[in-house]
Image (cartoon, rainbow over all chains, first blue to last red; front, side):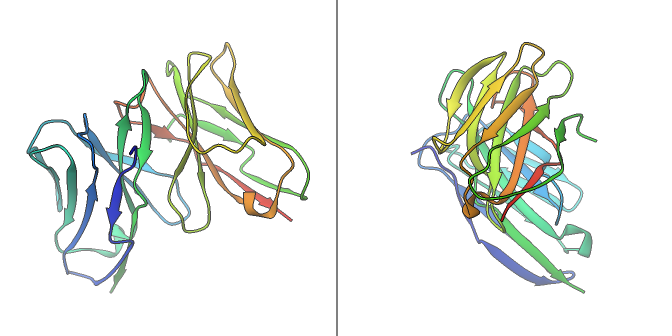
Length: 112
Length: 113
């Protein structure tokens, strides 16, 4: 189906701990995107992964795209209070203009 | 600032009423998406327009409709409103479709009382 499953729904960590969220699709994806939504804010694009097995890093954030292009993960090393928010994966699904479907999101709470 | 403008920011209305939410995409973006985000929920895809034409539909209720005008701004019309329609409605745009980064507006918070 045209959906992306994302887990976990919530994650509470102590500041300094690591955090990972996972996305999974039953179909091969052309690409996967990650967004962050701060509390009270709107989703903001973080990164796009396109190639099989691709790994990209942004400071403490590491993004991976699976070899089969059906799953992806976002890992945050040594979380900080500024990492608080909801992290969404999103992928374009079939249709001439590729509707962008979002996972359910993982809400991250960081306790100082 | 994403460059996507949504108005109004807040809207309070009564059940049974009709409202119109407006979105102006980034300059040059042809594709507009509408999403609904209920309290603490994910982003539910409603509908996508591209250069004035409807291109994809999600789980959009029959009471809801949208259009994209020649100047590329879009409107989402919600009618016969119910309490359960209370949510954040986001508009997003990108140049050509879902394959690329989407830029989101600040959202319209609709409260139905």
